[in-house]
Each structure stands twice: as structure tokens, then as C-alpha cells.
Length: 291
Image (cartoon, rainbow, N blue to C red):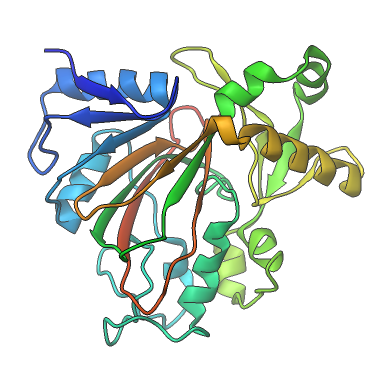
């Protein structure tokens, strides 16, 4: 039976209706969801009732979940038990209340307000991210998504030729350093060394091309660093023009799934005296990472 969908942004984000993701899905439905992801890049599921375990189980239908990057710090106390769960909240691990503004977890998460693609800084990059809302503030805290596919399609042929075959180096430490945050241990540096990925990502099932850039991209290989950074900035701007951006306003029970290989996203500010508890699982691009 075909999926019931409603377009949220022309040619981009789409709401999928009528599915309960807390329970196992037929293989045919999983295949339909993968096809929908290939077409739209961002899928929204409203009114879900997920536990951490059921969210992880849903993610496993599309690939192996990766490990939360903050779990590599020695002696760290995480709020969420499973190492696959990324804590996108503003909550203190010990008290469950909104964090102090100087909390390290908050400092790291502030980098999410930069346009980025999840885990481009890993050797095996992030594939699909699945972000679920447990609690949201009364206003603010939206997530914006930019369409890297439409951005590529719009590039002049001269730009497409220029970036064909070019690769950028990505680093979590680079993106956080842009905001002045450098508090990473030797263990974290060792676990998360810089990675290199093409500036153009290709969907192996459809052949559609996307620009693949983010705040994690520090420079373009074989290009002077200032010139490469200007190129990265131009490509980010191309993928985040207002008519290519879908802004998601969160409700409790929303699950938003996106393909990091063809989208960019960023979180928006909110009144942090209110709790905001979003939890993310990201799958590893194990099939297409070797290119």
C-alpha cells in the first residue's frame, strides 16, 4: 500500500502519515520509506510514541547506528544510557534541569546552530539522522534544513566542473573552534581524527548529485586554505538560500529523519530556561562510504 504523504516544501521535505514507528514495519514499507527519503531528503513523522530502544530499532532498519561523539571523553557522565543516543537537549545529566550556560555539553551543542551535516567529520560519515522530540519550549528551537541536491542542480556548469573530484577535510574540532570552543581531550582527538570527503555527493540508488559541505569542513585539499574556505562558504550559501530551506517547528512526538549526504541543517535559538529534550540516532554510511 503506498505511503500517505503531504509535501511540506516544494521538492524537498515531506510528512509521512499513518505509520506507528514504535512497532516493526514490513519490509515493503521500509523500502517505500527509503524511496521516499531518496526523493525528498527529509521525512517528518508526527504523533509518535518512541522509547530510546524503539527509536534505535527503527534506525537499524536503515543501517548501523553510530556512537555518540561525546562518549569518547574519559569519565564523562552522559544523561542517556545507550551510546547510540545523541543528547540534543539542554538538560543537565545529574539533575535533569536546564543546564548552566557554561556547561561543556551546552558549549558543544551550540555548534549545532552552524549549518552542518551530521558526522561528516567521521571516516565513515553519517547517513540518516533521526531526531525525536520528548519535550520542546513554547517557542523557538526550530530546525532548518537546506537542500544540497537543488543547490547542485542550480550551480553554473563552470562551478560543477570546478568542484568535480575535489575533496574537503572535515573536523568536529574545526567547527567548534569557529565559536572559540577547544576543550577536547587527547582521547577525543584520537577517536575523532579529521576525515576527507568529496564536495559532491552522489546517491548510489538514484545517481542524483548534491553539494556536500558543512561547518565541519575546514579546507579543500590541494587548494590554498583561504581560497578553499571561500569555496566552502559559497557552496553552503548556495544550499541554504531561503527558497531551498524547510524550517521544522517541533511538537512533542515528532520524529524527523533526514539524509545527511544531501542536506544541511542547523538548530535555532530558544529560551533555555525551558527544557528542550530531543534525542538523535544517526546511521553510518557503511554502504557508500568507500568511493
